[in-house]
Image 1 (cartoon, rainbow, N blue to C red):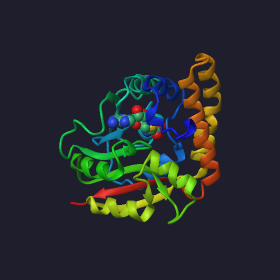
Image 2 (cartoon, rainbow, N blue to C red):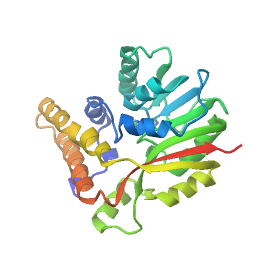
Image 3 (cartoon, rainbow, N blue to C red):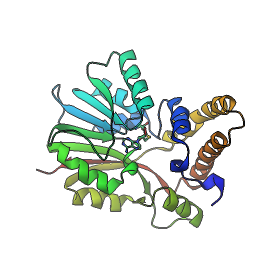
Image 4 (tube, rainbow, N blue to C red):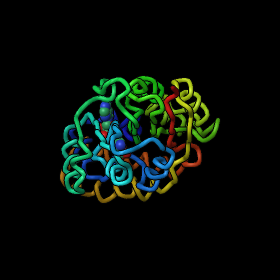
Length: 258
Ligand code: SAH
């Protein structure tokens, strides 16, 4: 395997954290998309408990908090992201309703049926979509919602180059009907699925990385790992541009059946 097809998981965690800390978001998305997904959720009030799992520095969490009632707990594996998350909440005066905590999505310490809503943008792949929707379900009240984004194929067939890339990066990538089937099988009504528009990847994600990449490379001159990380991100952006009709992120919204 050549360097530019390395999976993101193979890079030094410290450098990955530093690189992504400089971005408002750590995955594709947009405030409009977060709000569109929120429009399908009809059970929230001031007493609601919401979890944002794999929250990163909280780009989407703050949008959610500004448009939904209740309290939100953001969970992320990386302390540096959680520090920025809590600083962002304080900056927006949301600290009474929004708290970031370090934790792992495969060992969540919520109580059974504690949550009204589980949110997760661009993160459930870390545990795997099918495992995530099944394991997290117990934390939701009956009638509670799950809303997650997940990389998905738009067609049954695709060119080998992009198929190989994803099979290496995330073998669980699948078609939208297959994911909906998994959601329903896990005990949710599949309320909605919609494809994130292209600008979630381009303007809101890859293009914002150009400046971050310049600063990052200047800060780490002649650091091969840093160079490889940036090359990897650029390669991903190029692949997206070339093959975007075949794949993208999809928001899946499910309601826990009674
Ligand atoms: N939701 C954010 C971040 C997406 S990037 C956004 O859309 O911008 C994926 C996030 O998952 C990263 O912040 C990463 O630190 C986090 N993550 C990876 N493995 C995790 C785990 N096991 N438990 C919790 N968070 C994890």
